[in-house]
Image (cartoon, rainbow, N blue to C red):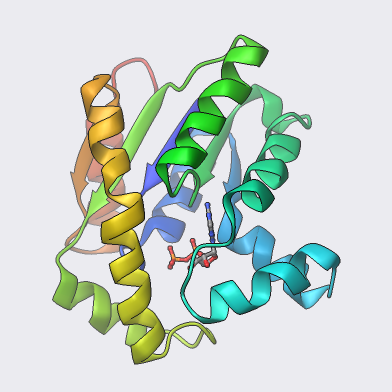
Length: 186
Ligand code: ADP
């Protein structure tokens, strides 16, 4: 099973992705977490990614695509995973299609967490991550609207997109996601 989770920074995507993975017993693959681990471990990938992340820019597509291709082919991920934070641009979505068609696999569901901008900024300023300064947050929201939001139409046109209202408590949103998951996925 492969589920894609899309949502602007601060939408609660990471939290909801973890809960859903636990519920479905699938692996949670967060590209943001993978990069943060690489930065902490001072790997070559981490050194390459660091400046982009600190400025709120996307890490270059090829670096991300190679990292994800390797991760989703590794057991036990190959049996079921949720991609949190990937794809984040149209070229990444097209690369994912190529990777999956080579494997004979498909996308089971694409979930979008929808939250208004004032709530996003308030939530992000509450966090303590180095890329959560006001200036970087503004840039990440801009990058989301320019580079990531076109993906919503890409998947909507294929009938794969489910949009979920991200307002309310963590538990409210979790229950909404379970209720709205395309049938047969719970
Ligand atoms: P958030 O969703 O709150 O912005 P993430 O943890 O998903 O946080 O991502 C943090 C940063 O990691 C992004 O701002 C970006 O710089 C980088 N990143 C994560 N996923 C991708 C991706 N698919 N493509 C390019 N950059 C990425």
